[in-house]
Length: 217
Image (cartoon, rainbow, N blue to C red; front, side, top):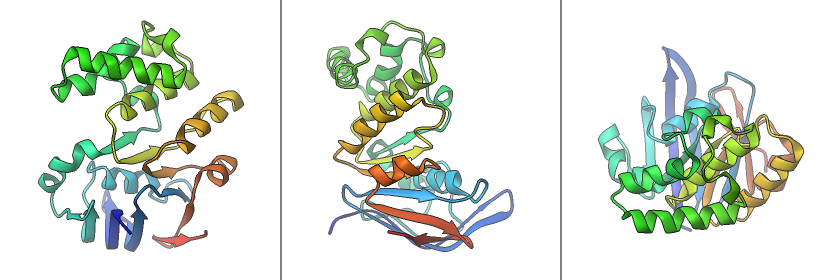
């Protein structure tokens, strides 16, 4: 079975505090994984490590069968990983919705025409065409989350990392987000406290215990 991610005997620290010791995590191609645990146990730092934003101290880290030892090893794989921040405001790179969604595409040297086609398509897929010309910071929490997710997905990553994606959303927006994510044909790792969302979404659930991941399902 093709493996999108492999962590073996990994140690991760933050501010001299050891968060994980001898952590193991394998994510198969197109598998949807949820990670739960108490606040402060390191879930977000784990996502940041997988996203190349934080460095492990020891152990094996393979992304799409490529060993990652240093940050430079991550560079050629960066476009294959999409990261959705817990706070949507941290995600935005341009003030207008359509410009923000297009930003990463243009940064990767896509033509303006091709970028516009992709933006138009994802706005339609998400049902948020009416937000095209809106200022991102004036949107509701749910609208911000959808725009942020659209900005990640428009780049067509193979692995998605989602930090509390349903946080602060009303029930209608939660249902819409669950529908979108459940239909994605990608490998996904999600950190969430939202039990109903996890049960509907995840193929596999892990819990952080004693600085390791314990598989629950």
